[in-house]
Length: 267
Image (cartoon, rainbow, N blue to C red; front, side, top):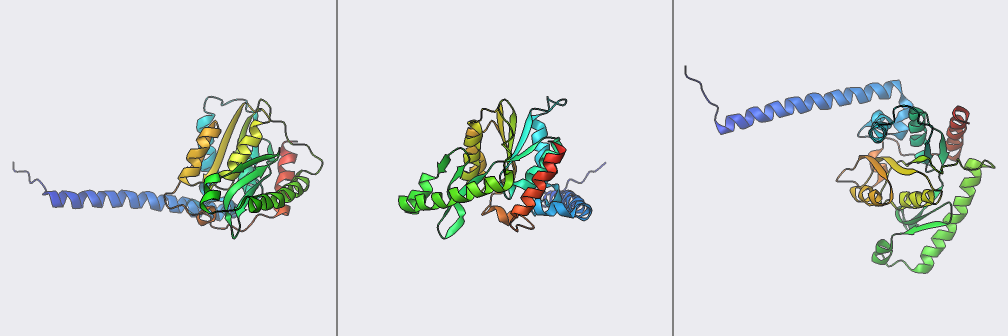
């Protein structure tokens, strides 16, 4: 019996056809799931990178489940700290899914003058300051300008703590597993300040969880945090807002409403 063996070119064509048919089906399945979840839960679109739309909270929690896979039972030692304002909607979804209490960790980015989305450092509760000296030197930013921005952000940090907490003290985190959540990482300065501030409160473990991050920021945090969950680290990352369907600023009112809801669930 004669068996015809396909030529190299024919084999290549067959291989590509199988690949694209399989990949196309997989992409179509993801798209269908995304659209279906977005239709059922439209509020999730505000806290989901546009690449994954409504799947983001589930994917972050999936990454966290990997960390807690040996602790299926009692999780009363887990606390979720969300960085306001953008991190609060994300943190709220994660806290609700993990059945954990939620609190805010106020951190203020020190934006480069004229390009405020780019962080040259950050400050956090507890008089913690983190400065990206390489960036400051590269952009020739004077020390006086750095101190001016820091003073302004300190005023805003104080205002937000009063607005979000009022007279309520921060949740105790000593000996707890703390999950610090934000809506994404660009330079990572804000999150590094958050990690340093949390370390001063003597938690058992510090876990960072974000839906999207630059590769560099995610790698840097692996030094300061015990565990890091970055759902997406795209190679063409240029800013957090690039990966969101709706990146409209979260208001103070939205933050307070979510925090009140969370406190009623876990007083």
